[in-house]
Image (cartoon, rainbow, N blue to C red; front, top):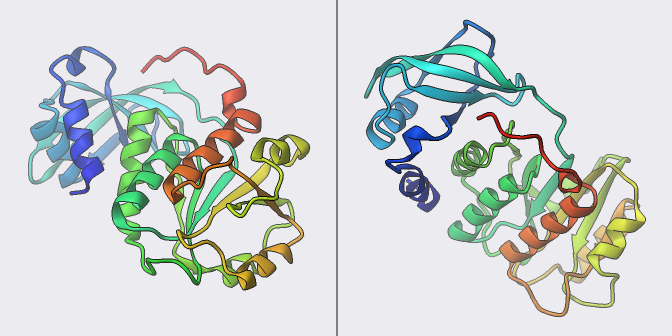
Length: 269
């Protein structure tokens, strides 16, 4: 169990939670009025043993396609699974910002933090990119996906970001989409600040890249400069850790190009 899984249990296992909004679960099954959604063993354990839910209690469901739906626990058996009965739709599916986060792999706790916060900040794709100075060469994609799902459940997102397999930088840049701007966070100085780069472009599709703790090599900078869609930007006068840079850059992007520009509708769930 990851540290963020334990935090999820601690933060949501609140005696007053049962009287507030329903718990949210991400499922892969289609959602419609009257449909039945199977629970796997882990979900049944979470509902019964962690959250103390029982048959008849409400649950909110989303699958990234059909919006968010109200359901009730129809049957649940710890250690075996269960079933949810879908009743009505709470929110329709909406278009979400098209922003990728590409980052050099870092140690386990920082990569967990990046995954959770990037999900909360609306990243549509999480993509580890292998660079020469990366201190970590492998990423546990299953763990990354689990952290992304848990974060999406808690922050009321209607989707879960895709998690792409680690890819070498040169390979990641091959066949780069012509319409997608690549914003590289550059700690060397001498570049425009991030808000200047963001406000000058009207592009709708973006990717943010955060480099390794040791920075990009000269060869990697040359490779990035060779991409017409690449833009370099500074994040201020201080050197930021990789996880801080990722969070800060995503927040800047959301405030200028993302869904922070308008108020969300009132919550029904």
